[in-house]
Amino acid sequence: MRTAAALVAAGSLLLTTPAAARPPAAAPGSPSTSEARGTEVTAARAASEGIDFGPCTEEQELPRTVECGTLSVPLDYARPDGEHIRLTVSRSRATGKDPATGRAVPRQGSLVNNPGGPGVSGMYFPVLGVVPGWKRLAAAYDLVGYAPRGVGRSAPVSCVDPGTFHQGPAPAPRYPAATVKRERAARAAAYARGCAERSGDALRHYTSLNNARDLDVLRAALGETRLTFLGSSYGTYIGALFATLFPSHVRRMVFDSAVNPAPERVWYRNSLAQSAAFEDRWADFRAWAARHHDVYGLGDTARKVGDSYDVVRERLAREPAGGKVGPAQLHSAMLKAAYYDDHWPQRAHALSAYLRGDPAPLVEQAEEQPEAEAEAENTRAVHLAVRCNDAPWPTDFAVWDRDNTRLARRAPFATWDNVWTDLPCAYWPGPRQRPLDVRAGQDALPPTLILAAERDAATPYDGALELHRRLAGSALVTERDAGSHGLAGGANACVNAHLTAYLLEGRVPGRRASCAPHPAPAPRT
Image (cartoon, rainbow, N blue to C red; front, side, top):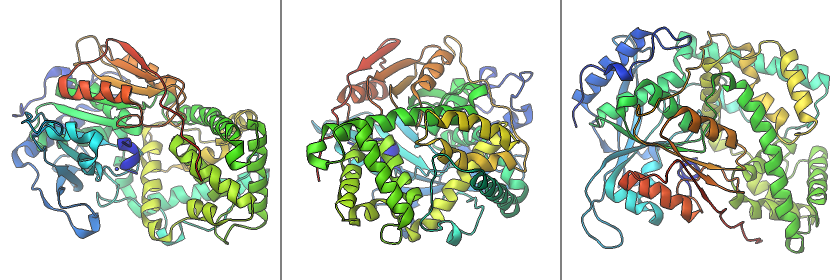
């Protein structure tokens, strides 16, 4: 059973919001009261109108068991009667039958998922209902996915011509020269200008706070007085904002692989922390490959495996594999192994085969897919629009250079790649928000559940600890000595048992619980 994040890569409404659900008006960085009122108005309308679900279009590539609809939300919540955009929504209805016994199961409402990003669609989440490990949840809940604003068919954002997004084999120096830095800074500035030119004033409304408001409107449109939500990765940040803005609208909420929500960490310092954590996760892969030197022949120590990887990088720099895969494409493929350890056997085999003279597995795993260019460009555009709008970023490249040159000395694997991903935020044309101070006091929320792996690199473990501290009454389940990103429905039966008990019964394991790590993947060719 795979995680929701990995597979998706898948009552009555009160017409006035209770005071507890409104953000404190005087707090620095808090949303305006006009936006709060706009959300109330929009949610009330959505509750009245609902969502007209029907067959999904062929372009959405969803099975017939899934139905689709759209949800209207204002571009700007301060102007609920102004311009609206439509978000695509998918749903599979609760089966109502226990998969083991066939007995009737009472429906518990809708379980809404956000798989992360920013920039990732959750439209495929309802497909999980046919996966054995999810059938108990699919018996009790309608499984609901959606494409957040800007993503896919939900008022998509674009910053460059998708046909030029993939440029073919490219270098990826761990310690870039000054000329490379100047060229990448110029490219980042041009990308930021492209975002502004293509989206105009609408660009500033693609934010995490608006994603949280959209989620409340979706809750109302589904006929739910309170929300049951599973957020993975960046989806945990949307959930944390929702819990802060609308605490009385929370029923059950799962934070799977939590982003650190501390305002001073969003988003620049979270990126620095992520780069440091990826170095540790890269070391985990190398140690695993070394233990299986008899299978892959990459080296019998982690250091020797790293040397083998460097040989591959150097050869690809001289001659891209199949004319398609250079160091940048190789790094992108290996980064997936830092997210999910079930990629380890494939990646180790590809490196091994390449060094033996067979580049085919590496090309298959690492080449860019032209047919996916539009989706990839949209994903990056939304990723940057949300993060750049959400918070202040350093506007002087000298700050980025200083911080990341220092960090790359001890964590070279992902540091500069992260910089090139985020650098358009240094030149972003729109206004920056101040991050909301996420928190909920004792009894403000029903119990919530946080799932985290100690060695997760994409969302380092300290983010789960910080969220746990800020949400009184939350329970933290930790997978020890493991680092796969996204635990819900994954390989750890102990974690899944806590998830199921919570979503089906509302039961949490006290304040903290831990699970032994899931088994490391077996080597295979």
